[in-house]
Image 1 (cartoon, rainbow, N blue to C red):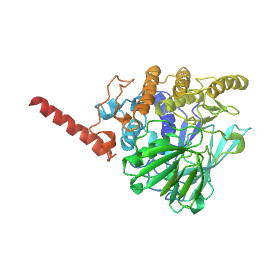
Image 2 (image 1 turned 120 degrees about the vertical axis):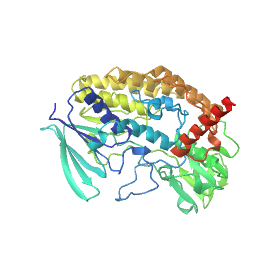
Image 3 (image 1 turned 90 degrees about the vertical axis):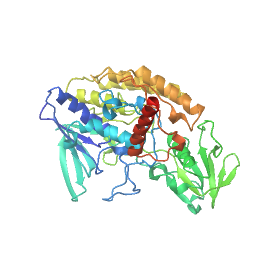
Image 4 (image 1 turned 135 degrees about the vertical axis):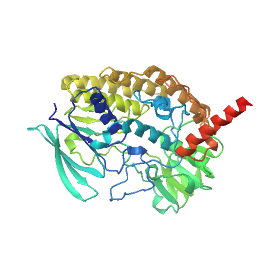
Length: 461
């Protein structure tokens, strides 16, 4: 086993989860294979590694991340907490249930900084092409070292694709949009709501990105926000200033025309129209081809490429669970690589996938989706020794979260939940979310300390 080599493409939450899974074995004194992780950005974190850039980066590569200023978690942190590294351990005190991006990024880094995982990562290195040799049973990965403009190749026995699927925009066309005089961008290039203050905005889409960007722009001073949906509206009780209209049909200059006959003028358009699963470094026979859904076809247990299980995909599902799901996947993948997990035959794997796919097709409500992914997590937990956590309790939190948003889309982030890992109740944030215009880690944590000191003084008096 020691002479085996594992290649990992991407050091976002999924790639880091895979590194952490092997580190957990090393912590127990187990000898693990050689691991090399390739990251095209200059730092780890994937989507959580914020950049002000859009389009292309320093070395001319397409920008990976879609993060923006003022982004706060849109789901309770208690639903994504690492089972082996709690928020309590990292911050050494309770924090609120909905932290901003810099705080969550700090938490992600906290776990991985405890290990030597960074030693395995080659930054500013992008995968250009992958080949698989049936005779040698090895993957050849062709790579570019972007810093020194050098192309080279390496061989691996297992290849883990952890490059994510929220970085290649799906950009639709609407008749007349080329003559729209205002700004037209995809959510991928949205970097903050400041530039849209006092503007009338049109957002195309009814996904979580449309919901969150719309609310963020409203919060930071947009004059009005319209969300245009294709099939079903988001359907929450929107405040005055935000509304939903059926699908846009076309533009005439700055006027948008909608399917119900409504017409309105706008200053800017943001396409919240989703992303493509894109793997330009993989040949056709190895490439996962799917739309965004809870259970992509061709992946046994949502992980192993059925035609070639040594090719492993992490984090390719649509997601309710995130960090802890990536962990459960990475632990199972690790055990397969280490020879501790035997896979059934290809035909038996096909039967198992079909069972999940059939159930996936029948899902209707948000609660149905949560139950589906909850059962998927339980299935993965049965395959490895990943530290168990109360998945049913997380499911309950997710369902309450759905109800909270229906109750008030502007205040659900002020709610608090109890950790299923430590039992700690989250703290109330020092400022109501709608009034909090600073997403920095310093303000988030410092102001918490100020509040605690004020309460202590008040109690003493």
